[in-house]
Amino acid sequence: MSTRGTRARQALARLGELSWFSSPTETHPIYGYLQVPYLGWRYAHPSEEIAHTIEEILRKLSTHTEWTLDRTGRNWILLPTRILREANGLTNPAFTNVIQSISIHDKEFNLKAAADLELIIHWLQQLPDRHH
Image (cartoon, rainbow, N blue to C red):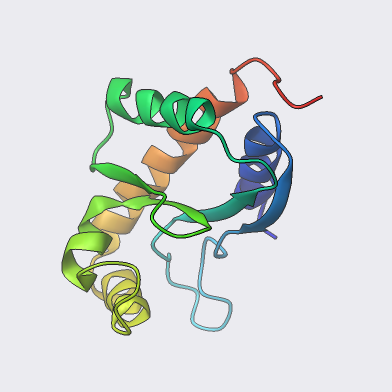
C-alpha cells in the first residue's frame, strides 16, 4: 500500500473500526503514470455521525475538484465527483474504464485530485480519535 494509502487508512481508522480498506497506488505499477486517487473502505459499525463528519470536511475544504462520499453500497467510496458523473455511477461496468482513461489522458486532473486527497487526509488526521 502506498504511503498515502497508509495515512488515509490510519486517519479513517481513528473514526471507527475498519473491516476493509482499498486505495489505488499513486502511480500505475507498470507504466508509471499518475492514477486517479480515490479511497474505498467499510466500517465494522458505520454511523451517520462519521459520514456527516467526513462530508462536512469535504464541504469546508477549498479543493481543486469536487469530491463525493458515496455511501450507496456497503462500502464507502471517497472520489472525485467527475468520476461518478462520467461513469454514470459506481455500479456501471464502465467505471474502471473511466478511471483508466482519465488517469492516462488527463494528467492535470490527476495532479489536482492527488493534491486534494492529500488535503482531505490531512484534515481527517486532525479529527479526534473516536475509535476505542
